[in-house]
Image 1 (cartoon, rainbow, N blue to C red):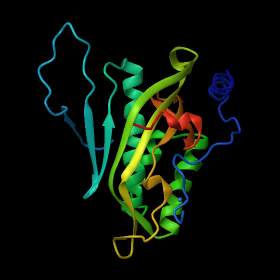
Image 2 (cartoon, one colour; image 1 turned 180 degrees about the vertical axis):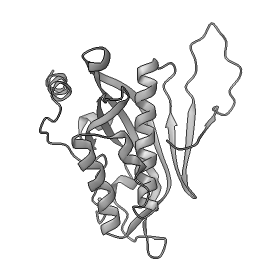
Image 3 (cartoon, rainbow, N blue to C red; image 1 turned 180 degrees about the horizontal axis):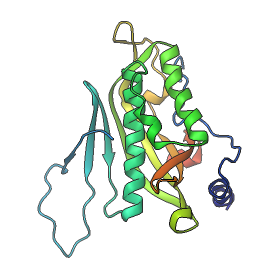
Image 4 (cartoon, rainbow, N blue to C red; image 1 turned 90 degrees about the vertical axis):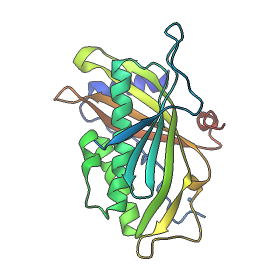
Length: 223
């Protein structure tokens, strides 16, 4: 598959040119490591040891009125768990940068290569347009869709569906929602993060891709 080939090329070269896009659409005028708390689904009961573990929800309090909710897969392995934590911290960190007016730059701790530029661009658009956010972003259907290499040379692509329909774009000077809300406040989209091992052995995001409806890749995010 072309995606796997592209992934292998990216992760075997330190800085391969790409056609990366910001991690979410940055059309604000569209007519388009935080503390966490875990919550069990309503009506849940003690887990039967003979059954696979049930998915859980994790809520990250980004700022007053701003949250990121992660719907964890049932039984991720160690590497998948770490990659999900990296992506979670990135989303929470990017929103924290926006609501802090750019003062919090912790989101840059989990990105490298092309993803640094993409992440900075995404935050920069909000700041340039004097925009902020309020509400809840939900990450679900997390799945490692491609892998390459092994050990310290291992790379992977983590796909996630993102629902920001419970978020609102604000005018940061007034704190009130803008009249024309962008498309990402209405429809879910597919986000992909290509990751690799950094020099310190930890996972870092190296490249972002996304697909919006009606793209076939994003249709799996409808529910």
